[in-house]
Image (tube, rainbow, N blue to C red; front, side, top):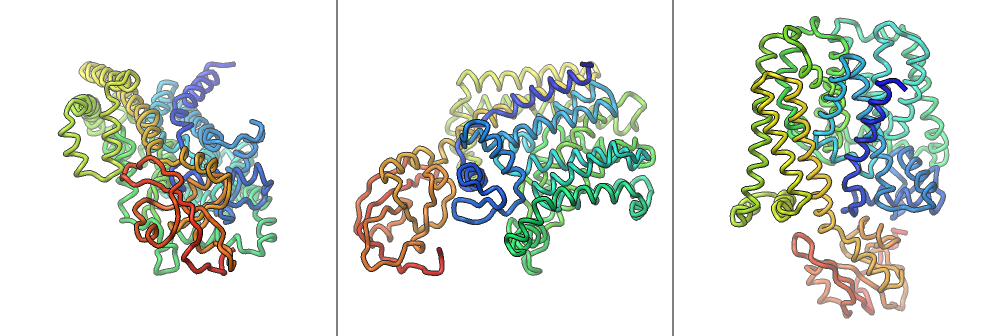
Length: 561
């Protein structure tokens, strides 16, 4: 085994360990509990072709993520828990870190490869989605892998060694999140060709381009064709018109209208969740001008970054997970600017790079010092929390309350020490070593967030223990709620918590269990029943209350089954 392969293996293993922090935290709301139930549906009901969620709705995404997760659960003896639902995303994230390192090492050198790897793992926006039971990380891994394989062919290396695996991987990406994979790859390639002053339409005359698309289509058709036949084409309306086109166009043109935000939202989120290395963006832009003087591998990654941020910025729906594919090329580009030797980049870019090293190191040191000060100023914490959003205030309180615990204190100390080392290295003019120290400080901060604060917040927000207790109290009998679907409690309860409109129409009402929030005063006064179980207070102070009642004063809705 050569040194490069050994380095990649070590990097993958370290990434797997680092990103697995918080793997067993409970699910909150429906973000992860709904996909997790789809995995349960495959494992325990055998619905491999068209799995559905706890409320009977067929998955809105292609099933590759769920297939892999279900296969992993089967290998574990049918166990379907939080760690199992997140494992595929975790493995994909570790694989993506290896891919980033390998690309940077091949284009630049081994040091740049490790720096790119560290930059990626110091970006909170990337790490927070690693151990996450959703399709996005697997999609990002496959999409970026296919895109990297296309580069040699664009530069004249059109052999089956590249386009065939590119087509296979792109097909798998389509089976993860739909035709968006082909759209993003095509857009990024077009941007790159324009950057190097080539006509994107020239690809139409390339046999390898058509071969790649055909192979991808064949792989995707293995599921899409049977699914379309079985649903009589209904699956196309959901996955193409709603999940893809519906999220792109605004509501007034027929879009879903979900997550509509200003055009600059995702760019701001990307910059914020990739700090402190997003501070290198001005130096990167200066170093890339003029384009003809830039290295083509650098432009190729820049094109992908532009395509991802550009496409989703003009889309109507804008969710934080949409920027996930942008972190891999960003890490490679930052590593390139950091490791560029004297005279390899314009003087203005060198000055910006040096200034960023100072600002980033100082900012990390100030942040850690500020955290230590806050941990000893409860009055200041209370004042700040009153002027913040509820979730941000909760994060702040958890950080302050745990700042003196050994594990959290050690991470804060590690971040502060790395920041001081970065300042020392900056004074000595060592750009690469300064960036490594900054990355270590960033990774300590990310570890604090994904390994301690976020899991603790999830434990305080989630109703896992309450749902398990509720099942013991009710012996698994049906439970209803006036609040509407609740994927989180349904997952841990083991069956759907139905809306009251789902109650069967019978002349004789039998005692039923109803789940409400304790602020449903009107409901409690309109029924005769007794409280049999109550949850601990959530962060907003409200509790979930289970009532056992003799009648339900609601007219059933016979349209729902």
